[in-house]
Image (cartoon, rainbow, N blue to C red; front, side):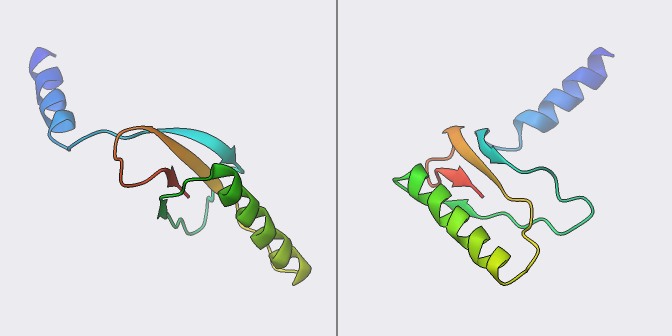
Length: 85
């Protein structure tokens, strides 16, 4: 067991810096389906969420199915992004 723990620890620590996220909006999983991720850098989370709501309203007006959309705030880690969308 000790050897197994050491080998798993070696793999997990060699994968690079960790990024911790906090959900600010979670509609659910997209299973089955396609998952697309975008890294976003913004100075206004409220504006990001507002644009997302406007986009959803435009899809609903066209009677297009709105996908589950999740937005996570970066709380620790990579400073090149503020959100994972």
